[in-house]
Structures are given as C-alpha cells and as structure tokens.
Length: 419
Image (cartoon, rainbow, N blue to C red; front, top):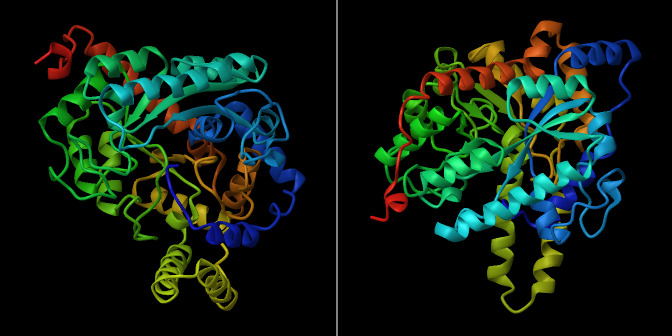
C-alpha cells in the first residue's frame, strides 16, 4: 500500500464524510456539462491498478459498474461512474512500492502496466488508449475516456534509461521522479535528503524525459528537487497529485516559491483530494491519534484489547474533523492565485487513498467540485483550463520539445552499457 493509516482513522473519517453532497442545481449542471463537453476533464492520478493488484488478483473483470459495493475492498472507480463524473481523460497510475529496486522494479512495473492495458482493452466502449494530446481530444469527442499511464516513482526504471524509453513506448506519459523514498538520484519530500535536489544522473533523467516526450512529475519530491527539475527541464513539468503548502504545511504539498516558478516553466499543479494534504485539522488530528495510540501501547504492552478500547474512547472524545470539497477548492484557488489560472489542474488520487472529502467519494463526483468553484465565481474559461485545457497545453508543449530534440542521441546509463 502507498500509505498506511490506522483502521480507526479510516473508519472515523469515512463516517464523517457521510453521503454525497446535495444535488447540483440543474442550471449549474448544464453549465458544467457544456464546459466538459468542449474540454475533456483530465484527472492526473487514479490508483485502481494498485487496488486490482492488491485485492482482486490483478483481474479487470467486474468494473462496468457497482464497484463501490465490491468486496473485499470497495472501489472509487468504475466505467459507469467515470461517465457520470464527465471524465474525459485519465492518467492511470502505475505504482509499485518504492523500496523495490533494480530489475525487480522493472518487472513489477511491467506487471502493473499490463493491468491498465488489459483494463483498457476490456472496456472498449468506455476507455481508449491515448498517446498524444490530439488522441485525448479525439477520444473525448467520441464519448470515451482517453487513457494514459503515469509511472509513480523513479526507482521503477531500475536505473536504466532504456527501461524509461520502453515504458514510454508502453504508454507512460509521465514519471514521478520519486515516491516516498529518496532514490539513487533524487530527494523525496518524505525521506532524508541526499543530494539537495537532483544529482547529475537525475538531471540526465529529466533531459531524457524531455527528449522522448514524457512529462516530468514532481509530486512526492522535495522542494529542492522541484526547483532543480524545473531548472533542468525544457518542457513544462506537472505535479500529478499535490496541493498547496501555504494552506497545509504537509511535505507532500507545493510551496509558494515553487508555484511562482510555474508561469515561466508552463507547468501545472494538479490538486488532489487527500484529506491529510488539504486539511490541516485532519493532519493534526491524525498525528494526535497516532500519538495516543503509541501512548496506549506503551502502557498496555500485554493487552491489544486495552489499546483498542482506549483508542476507541479517545476517538469518541475527540471526533475527527470534517473535510469537504470546499477544502479542495481552497487549494485550487490558492494555486490559481499564486501561479495563475493557466497552471492548475485536478489530480484526485482516487483509489490510492482510504477516504475522501465529503462530496468527492468517487470518480462520479467531479461535478461537485466544479459546482463549488462556480459558486465562488470561476469563469467558464478558467474552469475549462482547470478541467483539462492546461494539461492538454502541457502535453502539446512536451511533444513539441521532444520533436525539437529528435536529433539528439538517446542518453545511456551505466546499467545500460554494462559498466
């Protein structure tokens, strides 16, 4: 699992989320539909492949509808709900544990890619594989979800630029430079730093990603790595699922000084739905709950039942904070204020998180977020940029940079040359 939460935290926050938000006013819904018919809603990060691998023996069967009731693990995604949510394009995350390295990482990544590619093939009326921005536009107009892949962690290439190129050929259109662990060439946001950003091989990785047309994803990386990658990249970068650090000082969020670099670079922060990242109250509550659990374990070393009972009593006395779609909208507003409306998108992280904000429980609920932004006065033009216009621009710019670099030879790493 990408993130481990105490079961009680998951239950408490899931209960606090409650049912979906109130129905959207028909006139507002009509406006949302008009915007999302003209511009595809492109979500930067969905982890259903991870769930299928961990809980469903890698099977892609049974995803047409009703997966929110599925056992042993309800899902936040299925084909019917993708259409209900007006999703027009999706980056499907290809994730493996960041502690896996070398050839094993490459093999497991291929296995995850296979899940996504089989899923796309299994639902041809709903999904279609996309390689370019023009593909995304064409597929959206046909009423299907344009499907691309995102490699979620630089260790997944096993130190091999040849593997990076072949992942691109298999459909990967971004790679996150790190996951939770600092790699052999880039500092993570959630691990001890080693390089103060990127080391020389990390800069080479960014260059090669530019050359082949793969987006550089800076979610999960440290601020120093963000700055080094932006400086090294000829193409716009993305943050496939991150939020604003000025609002919640979580290491996974993007600081304002980095947001201010995006206009010159052209990049996009795709704001996510993770409650711990978008609500300071939830983050603090989770830390306090973990501290209480540790205290109880120290006191009741011989009785897990006493620990469980004590934690339940603490939670009854300290209810979990409520987090809503308005909290997500706050982060979107902040990114737009600091970086500009041309540099914000949506990267929900659905099926990669155990609970969600109220009103954003699955892929069917994206219109609720647009309704909240309409309530705040967002224009149709800026909503279209948020939905997918900004990401389409970034994809096209990355394609143009790749075309301009086509005469440069492929970069080689030591593992590729046998040194």
